[in-house]
Image (cartoon, rainbow, N blue to C red):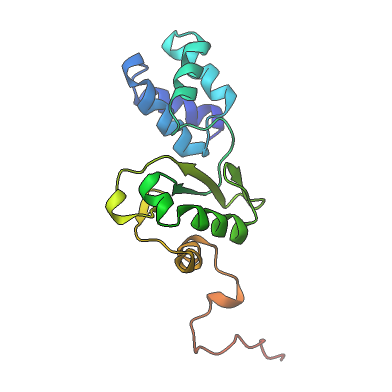
Length: 172
């Protein structure tokens, strides 16, 4: 299915109704990891709305991205409670481990790192989310374990611990 067909399918799923605009845009973003410009033009035409109005919605809500995002979306809370408990140091650790700054995507397109003002769970701060999964009471030491959960396993490391290495086939 082409990208154009995917967008048309999503528009159809939402019956081409203006009241479904945000849900429609969220589905497109889920499909592509961002909102491609052509998809916004197609939505504007299908919903008979000015493109500027759709762009206004997209730029108002922080959940939307006009830039391609990585496969995994990391949010580090820097709200007051998380900040005073080390949120800034946790952000620095993610930036260092991934070799990326907040607001950017890694070169391999695996991770996008962003900061947020509040995730609404101050009691368990500092908080990090990855793809919507919450990690409370995060420390700098926990960053590596969080990332390992989402990183592609290395080919050699994908063997079970203690299992023998594959042997070359015997020649006949």
